[in-house]
Image 1 (cartoon, rainbow, N blue to C red):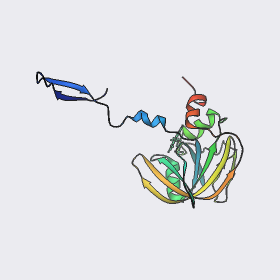
Image 2 (cartoon, rainbow, N blue to C red):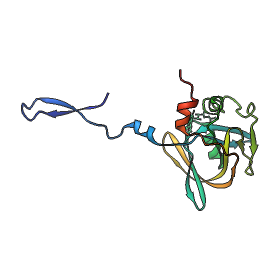
Image 3 (cartoon, protein in one colour):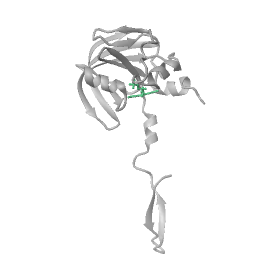
Image 4 (cartoon, rainbow, N blue to C red):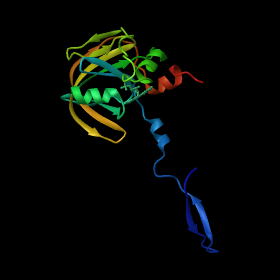
Length: 182
Ligand SMILES: Cc1cc2nc3c(=O)[nH]c(=O)nc-3n(C[C@H](O)[C@H](O)[C@H](O)COP(=O)(O)O)c2cc1C
């Protein structure tokens, strides 16, 4: 329910309650546009990755990407320790199973790459996903900022490849056409 603000009626001076628009309507964030990615890293010889919708190019010279990673994700810890990450750009034909596999379980509980063979290793030693992807980027962390719920990593691109011509999956397409409706 929206907060009600107490005011006095100018005629009878009794208390009235006027509904005011909140300054921040969280549903406005649904109008922002995003892609969908597998964000991978490595620590102590263990590979891991998670689904992320917050990768974006933030500079062109040098080429830099940002990713925003939830505090509790193993992938965040790995990026903080290793200082490197890969971004695999998912395409519209990605099956829900891939989203579930990387985005709805943690590498703390399962080895996600043991049962996911569609990968290659980039020059930085990390894995990237080759199935239902159209591009990959390898990044070296050049700055990071704690945002409370998330850590924002800015990475300088050390390698980038186009893998296919299929259209990129957007976050909106995922919600409309891939995510099961229960
Ligand atoms: C559609 C979708 C988008 C997501 N976007 C992000 C994101 O931008 N950043 C993030 O840290 N986690 C995101 N997640 C959640 C992680 O993928 C999820 O917490 C994952 O299980 C973390 O795995 P890990 O602990 O192995 O790193 C997203 C999940 C889904 C299904």
